[in-house]
Amino acid sequence: KGGDDTGFKRVEPQISEGLMEVTCNLVQQLAQPACTVIVFLPGIADITQLFESLAPLDDTRDISRSGITKRADCPRLRIFALHSMIPRQEQEEVFNEVPKDCCHIVLASNIAESSLTLPNVCAVVDLALR
Image (cartoon, rainbow, N blue to C red; front, side, top):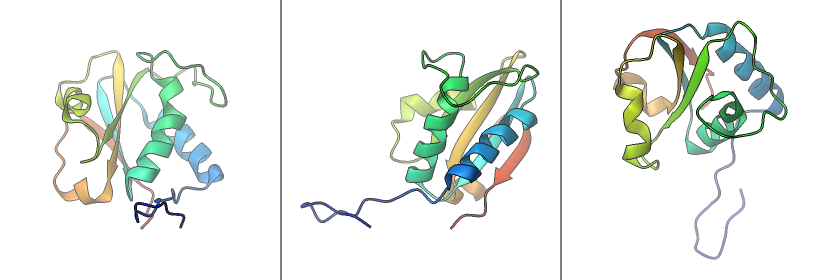
């Protein structure tokens, strides 16, 4: 799909807009204080797209909340993207203990499914996209 003069192909996300909205709502419903919710996605394009959709819900980021409303019963959220193309220092905090008033939302590629160990996992979402 698409390319440029370097010969690299642009990887397009597989998540449709409707599935994106459902996933954002599901993550908020599953979120519990002091726990981690992992969402497995096929690759960096899907991780980036979902991260951008969820980022306004992350209380530590200064991003306007356009398009998505945080549920009143949802704890404080921290959104993390895990992928080999993301700098290590941006990913390290996810391996720390989850604060008691917060829920970590971790977006990771399917390849990490068999090798990822995170603290206090309370839910795993696999969108079954390949």
